[in-house]
Image (cartoon, rainbow, N blue to C red; front, top):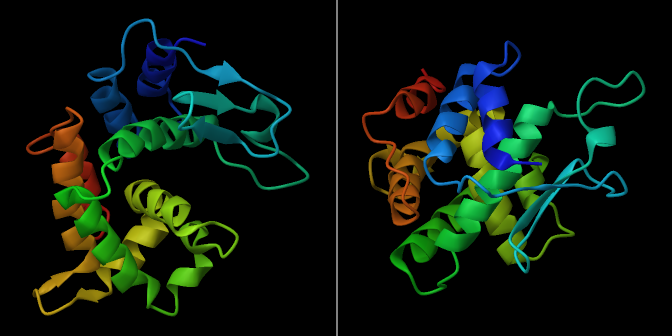
Length: 193
């Protein structure tokens, strides 16, 4: 399945949120024209990203409206997994400024008693997996963003959400995505207003 074609469908969709559309537009600038993702309807989850193969897989049977169980919209799953790929590349160097900053923020948020209700803090994942999920969840989950906006970050005078946006902006720039002054940046910043 061609990724850019899928992103264009999200951009043109009546069902995608404004934030999803803006994220899809931004990702169009860094995804190659020939890049594809896999359909794997035997996976136990709705989607996945393999760091080893750098491939996104989507389980079409586990996305969209289901009568018998809750599931995420396909737009959300595709964007979530594509972000995994971008963030994975940015966090590859454990000694980079970005990785150290994100780990520090992650540790601060993890101490909040409400954080464990979110996917990123599931105990069956190792800390590296949790860190990657933390970044993605903070970028895509408004409920998690509201939690971050309620937690002060050290003595910086900022919330953990504001600090996350600072770090994320640097992370995204490191992989070729500059959100400053874009509609995506505006959509993200309106989340907590």
